[in-house]
Length: 278
Image 1: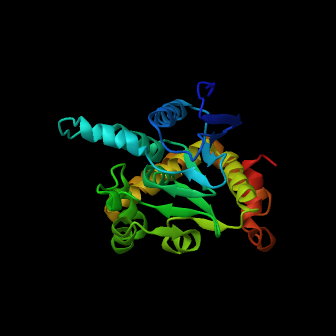
Image 2: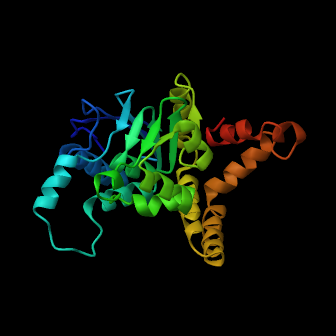
C-alpha cells in the first residue's frame, strides 16, 4: 500500500507499523475533506495485509480532532434526507477502524471532541497527556446528540452514568479523570507520551501477526454472552496452537529460560525476544 493520496494526513510506514499525523489547521476540525481522507485511509488500511499496528496522532499539540464541522451539520439540517436504517458513513468509518484486523492506537496530546472523540473511542487504545488532553461531547448543549457512534460506544467504555454525565453535561473531561474512568488507557507526561506509544506500537508490531490479529478478534467476542465468547476463544486458541510458528516459538521460549525462576522474573522481555527471533 502506498498511502500517498492524502493532503491533510501525513502517512508513514515502518514495517508493520503505519502512522498517520492529522494536519488540518487551524484546529483539526473534521471537515468533509478530512472526513473523506480518514474514511479512505480506513479502507486502505483495512485492505493492507502487511499492516499490523496503526497509530493516529496530530501535528497540532493543542488539538487532536476538534469535532465534526458544524457548518456541514447545519447544511444537512437545511436539506434533510429521508430517515434510513443503514449505518451512516461516519458510523461505517468508525466501525471499520474498530473491527479491522489491525491494532489501532490514538495518541491524543490535546483536545478531542464531538466526532473526533467518537472516532478515538472506536480505536483499540487511547493515550493522553496529563494536564493537556481534554475530551468533550459538545452536541447536546447545541441542540443535537452525538451521532457518530458516541451514545453507543461511550456507555460501553465507561458505564452508563458516566457517559450521561459527559453527554448531557457537555463537560470537559480532563486526562486524569479520563484515565480513572477508562476512556484513556493512560495519562502520561507530555514528554513521555511519544516514547510510550512508539514503544508499545513497535513491540506489538514485532509479534507474530496471526497471534495479534486473532487475539484482538477473541477480545471482541467478550461483547457476547460468556459461553459464546469462550467457544470463540477456544476455537481461535486451537487455530494458533497447531501452527508450525506457534510450536517453534513455544520451544524457543523454553530454550531462552521460560519456566525457570530467572526467566519468569523477566518474562515480558523474554517473550519479546522470542517474537524478535533473538
